[in-house]
Amino acid sequence: MKRRTAIAVTFVWGLLFGGGAMAADFNSPMTPATHQTETESGWTFTFAPYFWAAGLSGDVAQFGLPTVDVDMSFSDIFEHLDFGAMAIGEARYDRYSIFGDIIYTKISGSAGTPRGIVASEVEVSTETFAGLLGVGYSIIDDNTSRLDVVGAARVWSVDTDISFSGGVLDGVTRSDGATWVDAMAGFRGNYSITPEIYLTGWGLIGAGQADLDWDVAAAIGYRFNDTVSAVVGYRALGVDFSDDGFVFDVVQQGPILGLVMHF
Image 1 (cartoon, rainbow, N blue to C red):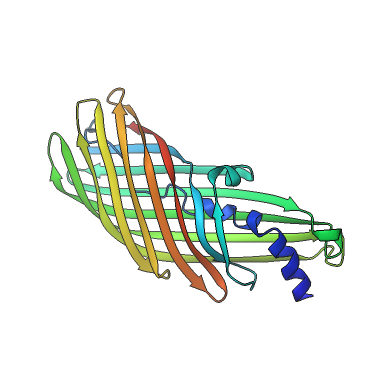
Image 2: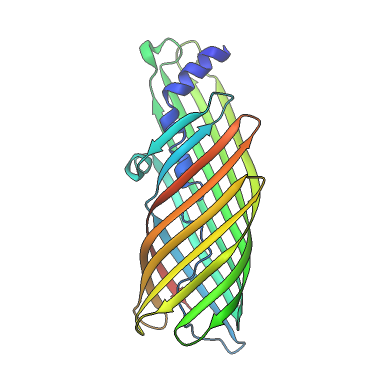
């Protein structure tokens, strides 16, 4: 039975790990603006929903099966996307900041198996949550630039369900997943080229339950007014986690697009 299950799962492995491509999709502490309107208390707040068209490459394994090398484009992933939500938030007071980033994606797909003997259809669903919470301090903060040193914790959670219809494995369902936490540290910064146009970027690296966790990005932004700005750029993120047959050693990268609101 285990061998038959492995054959069916391997047949739809590409669908299974399409969900992994959004595991930490656009997971960044960056809130790209150097000037924000202060409240009466001195606090400023930023909220930024965003979109990251990332592909995925690396090694993955679940359900006790051998590690598989994957290389998927964003279009491959988007084809099976059921739902996705991503947003960054920041609260800042003087040189101090608290920031968070939450990502949730659900991806599913189905496929038949050869000759339908093992199963006539295999359905796979992957839910991924990635959340980061951190603090920062500005070591440079003037009229044109800001550079923060930051420390944070990143939580990952990946859960996959697989079910079989028809054939020998009709009605069989299996679940596998993992949750882990990593400590992160690095820098993020902004530089104003003009009052409207600015550069922004970040670099984070860390480890914990994962052997390595890193995140870098660079973007250019445009301020429409004191409240709204937009950014476009490129981001790459990598993580190397393995535990008891579960392997998630991947690099995700692609263009980013975000809308930033200040209040």
